[in-house]
Length: 439
Image 1 (cartoon, rainbow, N blue to C red):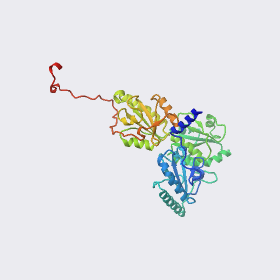
Image 2: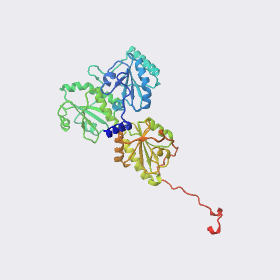
Image 3: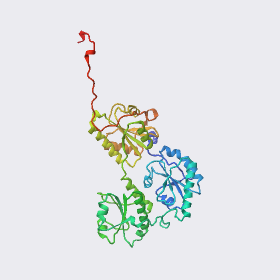
C-alpha cells in the first residue's frame, strides 16, 4: 500500500505532460472541443473570441485571469471561448495554431478567422472585441452576410461542390493512388438516405479542408452504383463507406463521425502527419537555449562526443538519429537541441552529465525546472522508449541544477568537417639555461 502511495506521489510530481485545463464550468469562458465547436462557433451568428491554449504554457496561465474578466465583461455581447489545443490538437491544427496562447476572432466569415494581435489585458481584449463587433454590424448593414456560412438544418452547409472531386473507374488511380496528397473518399449510392444526409456535410468539409490544408488533403466521392469496379476492388458492402488513402499504403476505413467538424478534424490529423519536423539546432548561445526551452513544452538536448572522438561521419550519424526522432514526435510541441561535449560545461553539470557517458540526452521542462535523462542506448529504439515514457508522465526526473537554466557560452557553429588536432609551436631550447648535469 505504501509502495502504491509513493508511486502515485512520484507519478504526480514527475508528470511532464499531464495537466488540467485552465477553465471550469463556473467561468463565463465557454470550453470548446471538436464535439461542440461546430455547433457553438461555426453555426452561431455571434462574434466569438477563441483562445487556443496549452495547460502547461506559462503565458497561457498568465492570460487566464484576464481572459475570464473579459468573458464576464462581454457576457451577452460577444462570446468568449477557449480550446485546450494540447488535448484537442486536431482542432488547433485546423486553424494553424503553432504556439500558445493563440487568439482568433471568428466574425463575419467563420471559416477565415482573424488573428488577434492586441494586448493581453482584459481591457485590451474587450476593446478589440467591441471593435470587431462594430465591423461585423457595419458589414451587415452593408448587406454582407454574417455568422456561419453553413445551413442550420444540417449543421453543415452547401460549401462548394467543386471541392468534392468526382472519382471514376477511369481517373481513380491517377488522381488518388498516384497522388502525394492525402485522400478521404466516400463511396455512395444515389438512392441511399444516409448518403443524402452526408452530402452537405461532406461538401462543406471539402471546402474547409481545401482552405485549411492548401489542397494537401482532398475529399472525393465515387458513385459505387456506376463505378462498380472500384466498389468491388475496395470491398464496399454498404453505403456510405469512407476510406482514407495514403500513397503507397493500403486504404483504411474511416471510423469517425459524419458531421462536417468530425470530417475536418480527421482531415487535419492527416495534414499534421505531413507537417515538417522541428528544426534541430546547435546550442550556440544563451538565446537559442532559452527560446527553445521556454517556447516548447519540452526541450530535448543531446550532448554529443567531441568531434575528435567521432569525426564528421560519426557525428552526422548521431544527428540523423535525432532528426529521425524529431520527425517521429513532430506532433508534440518539443524543441530539439544539441551541443558538443565540453562546449557547455555548466549545462552538462546542471543535468548531471558532466564529463563522461557521451552521447547523452536530457529532456527539460523549463516551467518546472525538471529534467529526465536517457538511461538506454542512444539509438532510435532507446530514445523512442525514453520519450514514450515521458509522453505518459512516467520516468525518473530531477531538478535542474541551481533551479534555473545555466549560463551558456557563445560558440562557433560546427563547420561539418572532421576535427583537427591543435598544433603546438616548436620549442626553441636555445633560450633555456640548463646545467650540464641536466643534459
